[in-house]
Length: 211
Length: 392
Image 1 (cartoon, each protein chain N blue to C red):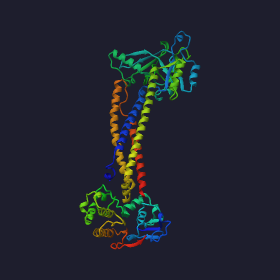
Image 2: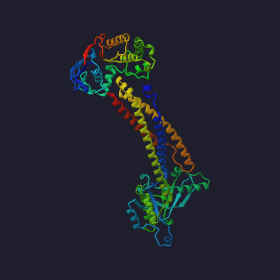
Image 3: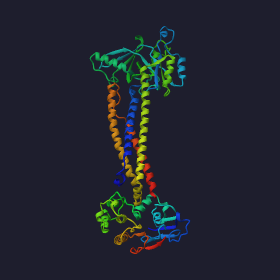
C-alpha cells in the first residue's frame, strides 16, 4: 500500500513557519516500510495519523492511498481500507470499559486469515495477560489496556499498522514483549508500520520522520 | 455487538412509545374496521347509494279533495334539476296497466298476485347493466324483487306447510308476468336478477316498461308520483331542508340510515385521525429514543466504524431491534383488536345488526403500511446518525 502526502498542512499550522519532513512537502510511504514519526508534543503526530485514517479533514493539500485521493474514496472503499488494509492502536486505546477483554477483541469485523479468538488469547498470554481474558476492561490498568489494544490491532488483517504511542505506559519487559509480537505479525503479513513516539525506538528498524 | 448496543439502556421512553403505539394501533384498526363495515352495511341489498333518495309529495287533505296534484309536474321536476345540491333527478316510471306475477314451477304450488312494476334510469341504481337489460325479442325480462315479496311468498309457503325459499333458490324458480287486461293479456317469462329493500314494487328495465305501457296502457299520459334524486356529495342536509320546505317526503328509513351512517362515518373518521395522531406521536417518541440511544452510543459507533464495520451492518442492528419492538407491539395490538372486534360483533348481532365478522383486508393493509412507514423512518434516522460519525 502506497500513501502519498502532497503538500499537506494541518489548518492550525497554516500561519506558522514549519520545518518538517511531511507538512507542506511531497512525502510518500511505501508498502512494507517502517517509519517512526518523531517530534515534540503538539507537532502534529496524531493529526498525521487521523488524516491518514480519514477521521479528520481539517487540512490543506491532498493525501493519496494507492494513487487515489482519499477525498474521492466512497464509504464502501473506506470500510475496505479500515477493515483489511490498515490496523490501528489508538493513543486513547478505544476500548469499551464495560466489555471483557475477550469481547473487546471480538469487536473487530474480520480476523486475519488463520487467526481466531484463540490466537488472540494466546497473544495475550504471551504478554502475560492470559488470566485477564474474561475480565472487564474497566478493571485493568492503563498498561494492561494498552496490551489488549495491541492484541486487538494485531488480530486484524492489515498492510499498514498505525500505532499512536502504543508503549507509553509499558515497562521495559512488556514493551519488549509487545515489540516482539508486532515484529512477528509485521513479518507474517509483510506489512509496514507507522509509529509515533516521543522517544526513539530502535528495535523495529524504524526510519525516523521528523514533524 | 448486541450486548454493547442494547444492554443497560433506560427503556422508559421506549415503554411510553410502545404504550402509545399499542393504543394508537388498536384505535386505528378498530375504527377502520367499523368504518369499513359501516360503509358496507346493507350494501348487498342496496340499489341506491347513501346520496340517492326516492321522493314523493306528502299526501294532504287538499290533494285528497282534488285541490292539489299528488304527482310532480314538468315544472317541478325542472326546478329540482336546477338545484345545485342535486346532481341527478329522474321520474320513476310505473305500470299503467294491470300486472299479475305468477309462479309457474313444479317445486312450489301455483301462486299469483297483482303487483306493481316500476322502472328507473340504470345510472341511478347500483346493478350490473349486463344482467339488467331488456330488448324487444328477449326470452325473458330481468326483474329486481323487493325483499318484502320474498317474505310474503315464504309466508304463503309456510302456511302451505312447504319449505321456505332462499334468495338463491327463488332466483331459479320459473316466473311469468301477465301483462294487460284479460282481453289482450300477454305472458312474459321473468327472471330474478337481484333483490332490494329500497323499492316496494318489482323493478323492471326502463325499456321494457316503456314498451309495456305503450302496448297495454289506456292512456299514454304519464303520471309522475315518485322521483329518484341524487344529492351532491356531502349536501344531503341541504337537500333534506329543501324537500321539507317544498312539502316533499322520502322514506324515513332511507334517510335515517343515511344520516346514521354519515354520523358514524364522521365519528369514526375523528377517531381514526386521533389514532393516526397517537401513532405519529408514538413514532416521534420512539425516534427520540433512537436518537438518544445513538447519541449515547457515539463512542461505540465511532469505534466500530474505525475498526472497519460498515454503516449498513451497524444500521441493521438498530433496524432489527426496532422491527422486533414494532412486531411484538403490532402482534399484541392485533390480538387485542381481534378479540375486541369479535366482542363488538357479538354485541351488534345481539342488537339485530348483522355485519360481516371477518377482519377486512384494510386492517392487514394498515398494519403493513404502518410497518413500512416505521421501518423507513427508523432506517433514515439511523443511517443519518451513523453516517455523521464516519469521518470523525
